[in-house]
Image (tube, rainbow, N blue to C red; front, side, top):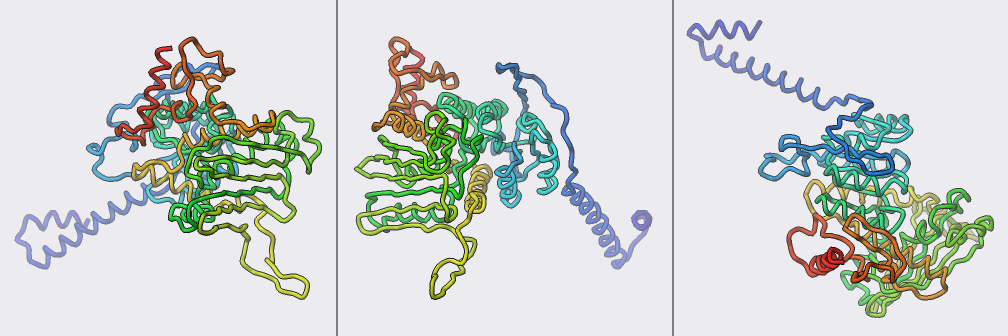
Length: 488
């Protein structure tokens, strides 16, 4: 009514006070409309996705079809749009596959990261996906991981599903133009790992491997000390990893063994601290805690193991792991340098100490669960990938990092089985690739005539999107390897 009266006033000669009133009424009406629009835009509506909006599908084998979405310029996701098509920096929309313990940790971190928002989650048990969506204000949930991957509004996908699904989900993300964060391992075998990484590299999408200890403040401080030469030049690295209690038999069986399942984090940390690729490894294992696992194959029958890893310049890394520690979760690192030493202690729930006539020490035991111990590391890891997406910077933990960690674990397994030093190049040379995304494992010496295998893991990978257009020495080496593959 007021606005209509204003229209009639326009037909007359109006006073200054009436002009002011008109301006005030117009501004209030505009503000009310803008507020209504803003509130509706930020009010989440929880939806359960039950159907795939698919334009075409590509057969991938094993009776599975991978939906592929073709986009014109108006449909491109934030990560695919060029700067000239983007007037302002928009939020990066992400989807999360897997709403178990790890998925929930990453969702919590995503909800706090600037410039990133989760818009869909999935879990085979849909009630878990619904609960996660409600907990973190995610508007959609589903039981089908492919609905996350093919969602046209999703820019990046967090893969927190069981390990056996990682490789195919990474490939599907690459085919649909989605950036990928994947919990380790990227795949359950070496050939599939190479294929998954190269699928992302060929598609030009980012891939980050989840190796959370690299983001732990304690280990990060040790790395900083090495880089700043606070203890001189590195001479020796020591790492220990001891769990509070052993896992059940069913978990150990088929888990890949103590090196791939447990020690892989410490092997990767030794490489992270050394700042170099390793040369060879000597590993031994034994069983002391749960004798029932002695009937299992390979390193699955070990609950205790030790490794010595040799790096360039004579640097040695010594690692011990055990599936039981009576005093809590024991995770420590020590680096001896030419002018000093830096070491970390375990992490406790608090800093309280007790002093009596028969005891002096921490009032409580160290954390006894890995999610409690590394919660901050998981959050920092997730935030780091979010920042990489928003700012289009290189990911801090690459697909190659995940590949080398797996190679180190496989070499340790081989060393323990054959009771000898094993060069990491031996493991790399077992990979035969017909193309960057078509690889298999073979016994050394059975390659096609004229094909020369590579001893360098980096040569198995094509350049990633973060490598940019700069022709580095590594890219030239990799290019030479793939030229040999094509010529074989």
